[in-house]
Length: 148
Image (cartoon, rainbow, N blue to C red):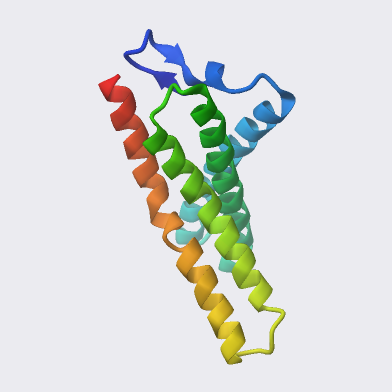
């Protein structure tokens, strides 16, 4: 559970809407984070093959990004976290799935044509920066909660 230290030691989940979809998004986010934490070492130690871990990792990463987007959207409406933290979370949460979708649309174009490469490049430019920014969001969240 996310706890906000300093502001009355308030539970951040209390700031989220009380709806069934909120609980589902929280559960999906936890499952995605668990899968991402477990599948990588299983690949490295040779327990699972690359062909098995790749779809699991990609799907889990998309779910993690959607969790990040929705959670930050809900927390922004509560005015509890700063707008910099929540907007950044929304941006990186939406960045990877949008870039992934754009790159996927490029598969509909003729193979290795200039339009396909341009669409792949656009998807890469949009989606790739979101990948290393997720840990930065967690650091910003911790810094913000530490100041409060």
